[in-house]
Length: 370
Image 1 (cartoon, rainbow, N blue to C red):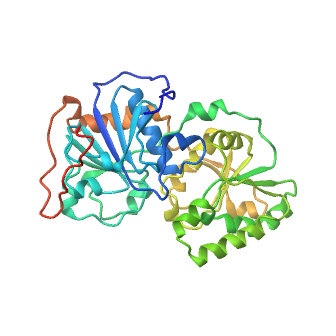
Image 2: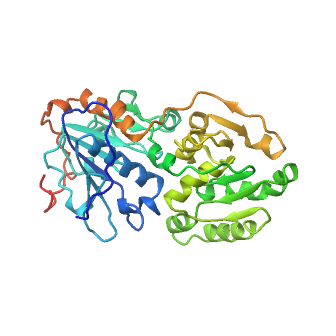
Image 3: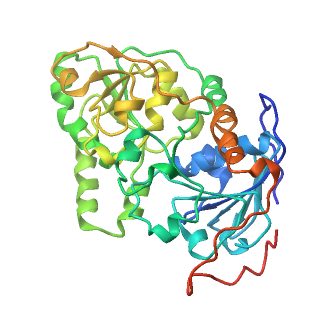
């Protein structure tokens, strides 16, 4: 395993150390936690920082994911292991599945069994749900998108912010700078088509687009519609007052949040934002959101100008109390550890999941016997 140099200083009282495993869904092209500084998607960033925060608080944390080279590594005090090394029957206190029910399909066991998601998932069978102690969602809006989810299992836990990283990359505010930092299919075309109208009202505005197209193209599998969309965007991005910066490093992204006067997000589909970490990053950095307040933006965009009003010259800012999104150490201390404790993990009980039905149990993996 590679050297571990990323463990921050813990805060708050410690709890007895737990053996915590997380099974991560497969991601196109694979990923490594060390990619956090350059190219990790939002979901993988959340998993990596969650694992680091738990490890910092003394827990033994293992994340099973699809590493592109199949190699194991250490990062932030946690072990990151390839899927092939997952043993569903290893001794562990907590097992969390992230965006994939695979562990429960193969009869995985743990004292505490949780599913954590940032997607609108298709309904689970009652038999699968019976294996869980909790199903963790990100916001009340996210919960409403899955009406099949039993209330008794639902736990709403916000994502955390790496506030230390954001604060370490402070930069002076630049008047008139607008930032777009979401997937291009979530509203970039609307913004670029409206851009001449927006600049009619305030000619000094400048727009920086700080998100690439590679993930969208990779997930599209060669779709001609997505290819045509990319061509349209290439033309629209060439207009006056627009700079296309593409995917930035994590450090440069943080600096751009501090530099921006406006964070632009004319969201075009409510279900595309079930939390929106960008919204709480913008609030932390003092940026005014210019948004279609749909989906979870109704909860996480808490200092904003209505996008349609802004397009027509409006500049009235609405402010409400911020949505809870503390640093990751606080999230695991105040939300996740109490959830583990509520189901007996702190006592180290060796309960196992209900037996899987015929045809659903796989043989244990040859490696990682726990």
